[in-house]
Image 1 (cartoon, chains in turn orange, purple):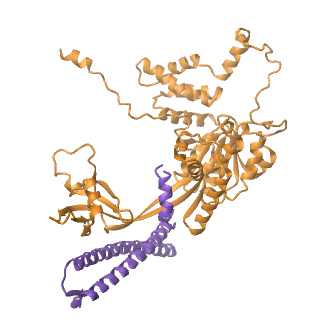
Image 2 (cartoon, rainbow over the protein chains, first blue to last red; image 1 turned 90 degrees about the vertical axis):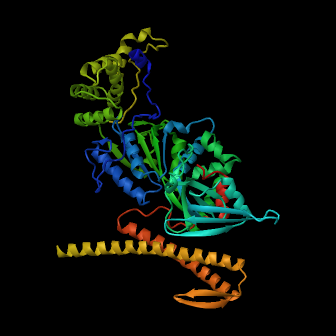
Image 3 (tube, rainbow over the protein chains, first blue to last red; image 1 turned 30 degrees about the vertical axis):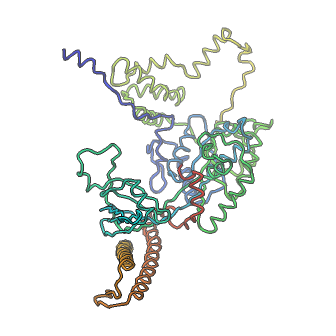
Length: 467
Length: 132
């Protein structure tokens, strides 16, 4: 029966696009207009106007190269958009500027010392731009004629006719060239490039004009336009590499594999010095341009006093990137000492930094942010569900409310509704606790938990969060 | 008010002249390349055939030359054409950057860089830095 057959045809969902939706994936930029004034809701950023304006000024300074070697500190309560502003800055700088993002605790690893990890992170944020140049002949093949001189010991003569939209010419080919042409199986209608220096032949595809030649072509058939302009072009390719990549490639025989596996180990300082001198030489000859990028250290209070001293010195060098740190601690102990200082960062480093403060969001801003996250996580929410969620966010925290979005949409999907309603939000609110309710719960039942100290609220040292 | 209009007009004129300059240069490079290729074909034919005298076109006049003279003339022409094309190309780069500057766009990255030498490129490609 047709209906049974139809029911057995499973719906095939294409899962080719696997997009990871992260906590800050909705941010496309800083959301500033042409005069660097922040718009209320733009490019994924909402509110927080002062901090965004400051970030815009910093962006301009980075673009003009005027801030290399100085540091910026983003400080504010948790959930006020510090990481979001850093993400926005990264997007606004563009793909050409190296942007390294790391957390403070990533410095500590058994494989590398802290200074090595910091040096690597710093060198990952400095790029150099170099250019390769080659003369190539690019054109569409009109015909290939290969004749074997009869009885002449197999000396072959070949003639290749190439054309572009503007001109056409023919080339006499030697034996090696004929060999490579035959190897590449070049036919009339192919668009090829011939490197003049190396003689390498590269097939770009088939010309569109010859697309109707055959009824069936193989899978690899790629069609390109007939090239225009002159036949003998000068091809320039500009590469941007980071200093870290150059270090790794030079430090071992198969260095490029280390770049992928991340297992770089300690790189000797002689190698780094050689690379520095080579890059300086190239810069003088005009062969390379230095692009200072941005190193973003989140949770900067996790760095200890040795790292801070190292950073002090590293910022003084002439090839230093812009360091942006973010922290949400108030006056806490500097790791590695018993001294207390603002944000857990020593005062001499704080002195070198430009500090940008972030403030908590207002209720309407929270609503806008939740709206944007709903769109990003592909979830339809009714208006009162959104209001309830905003109230939840105001009372508990923004992050908790964002977590509820996907969970509520899954609950709604289970009951086959298109929109998330207030009941769904209430249900997930009761299912998943926020930190305040979890704390209450623990206070009541802490005796029944394993490994409980039983000391209760007497010696509770609250984590200091900046006010 | 009139001042602003004048300024705007001047600015637009500047941009348009520069843009048409660039297009004219590009066309000229194509023309020169055509001539270069024709010369190359001619040189090829010269070496293959065994005539004693050849007809050369100078403008719209045909002049007869001996074999050696023809060869020298063609080769000198090729050299000059190469120099011209290279000069046009470097000037073109400067003009393109000036145009982008006028249009308030950032300059093309890396346009003004001196290219790496053959050995350096080889070393970098061999170490797979560029395949990344």
